[in-house]
Image 1 (tube, protein in one colour):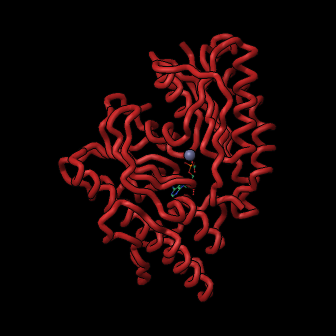
Image 2 (tube, rainbow, N blue to C red):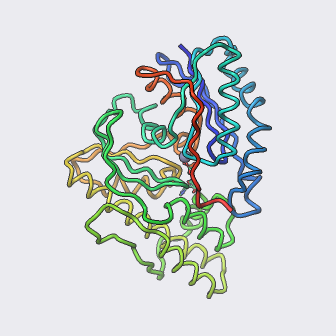
Image 3 (cartoon, rainbow, N blue to C red):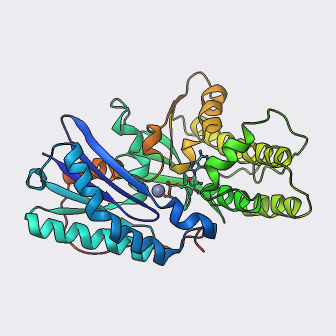
Length: 331
Ligand code: KG4
Ligand code: ZN
């Protein structure tokens, strides 16, 4: 059985082929960073148009690379939300048309669920229960994943997501979009700074987050500073640490309070090098930390294809319901 996964919820066009016996046979991702970087955020209409241009050639490339024919595909899994309406529609229309023309079923995949289980693609022994920290451009959600279809959300951001504030602060620092990798790069140039930004809600008893106050605080400092390369690194260093302090503290506390030792960190921000290092260093001995492969942290088709397989064991639906959200890191 071969499952084709299609991801187009935001600014990445991704395809992957998954074989339950062999795993991911191949995957391909096209990032629209060049399209959006001069605007400092995602322009939805440009995103839709770029998906339309890239869908066919990218799938062709993947089929050639993996020596697979269209007729070898048995199931098509595609992201149906949350995400941007236009980009979601392009992927859904493509998936539905291909499914109809190949006469194979298609299945709708929730983008957040796909992120949550993305670490299981390579960590074959990883199974629920686990604590999940999903940190992406659109979401920051801490939950207990009790089984493949039973989740309890412990907390989420009350305002901006972690990825979104990385992107916005980077923009104020004059760094290109996406800001997360740029802040990470800038902060790696120093190992000390005199800046000490607030750690929002780190002492609150709940598992919610709030990052917009930190964003405003840092932005005001940036606006009152004559930025030099050294200062950009100094600000990036403590800004990144402020976010990581809160994420790590609350996630490890959730593991302790709910007696769930496996912790899985997913979504674009989980690609952050310092975050990966610090989680492993700061965890308690009884805890186990898991991440997706680096290439599956940010949006990709592999997690959609994998989730297609998981879902296909219980249901194959073929309706067209897409679930857009108003993402806040768009302009
Ligand atoms: O999961 P993702 O690709 O898309 C959404 O579902 O939102 O996440 C994108 C987010 C962006 O905000 C980007 O700046 C952030 O992930 N990101 C990072 C890093 N790489 C990507 N944030 C911090 N450090 C990174 N290395
Ligand atoms: Zn995502």
